[in-house]
Image (cartoon, rainbow, N blue to C red; front, side, top):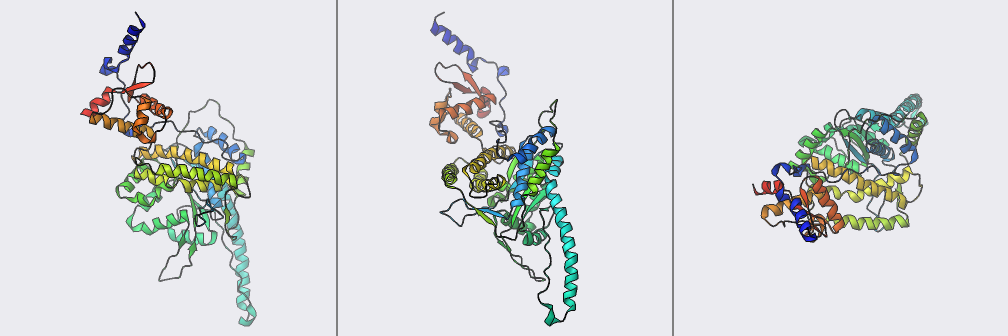
Length: 483
């Protein structure tokens, strides 16, 4: 057999038309396409005092490192909340970001949620206990001094003894009114939730619209004052509230769907959360020991982040190299936002990308004890975290049916639409995808990765071509498209 005949025979054997229906793979439903696997949590982002404990702790529990790492980062941001601000652009000085983060871990029952949260938040609750005992001791002294002051004649009294302030670090199931009172003294806090379902649900109640508006201010900073006929309330300036909590996938999906149905995604409240896909890893035969010294170092490090909120917030800016990198990152973000193919809910998430980058850079700069401008290293760490977080957000939001947010999903939808209209070519290759300008894909290398992912999902079948990788749409999808 000559070379041409051999090639023709191979082509015939590999042609999908010669496969029986039973031999064809079952394509993954469009709404369940996941695209690429979730990337690992970036290495070297957290300092050794945190990473040295969190890594063996996650391996001991057999949970993804992402979960304790991001939980700890959210808790740390609460200790810094209201104490620091980030000014990312010197040419736009009114733009400032806080250092408070909102972190939601989406994890089903039985995935060690309480173990993670209780262990990592323990240093904060120990601070709370110390502050409470100190406040009670100072209050007893104050009450005696005040009684002595009142016993004096008015002209002999002088200034009234100042009532001590109750320092706080953590709040849990608190009303908006209670949060306002605590923030007036402490400026910044972290709200810790073992189950975020109740908080999310309260934001969607019509009679709690004022609460929703307050939480938005508590993230972004802003002037807040509550006027009541029964009493006068002093204004609250730039509250800073971090949030860390867990929520099960089912309730979170319903919350997102309800928000989309009622148009509540417009204010971007849900998009402010850093979403982490939780779960369990394979149970190892040998698990590492969690050293007491490592945990003590974690506790000491976390407690050392807190400082009294009496001084004005420290304003953090970028050093020259970091500033240059920031403008490059800003250009990239703004160009992507202008992609007309983006679903609106995902556009709302990406619209928070620059602010989140600045916040993470500020938090990481303090954690790495830079004691000055934010370095290029801290900004690079922040950008790597933002890109990691977006992969998790895509997975979580897609499962909640917010929209097709990955390039794999968007290309799949385009191919299916072309098949329905009868304009899809019989053979598909990377160059053809680039020419169609699908989902912002600009290179053949990127197109090849997307097409290979669709092959793994059963959407595309490889066909022989002597020069370039080539696929054809799974006939099962063609039948569905024409039905």
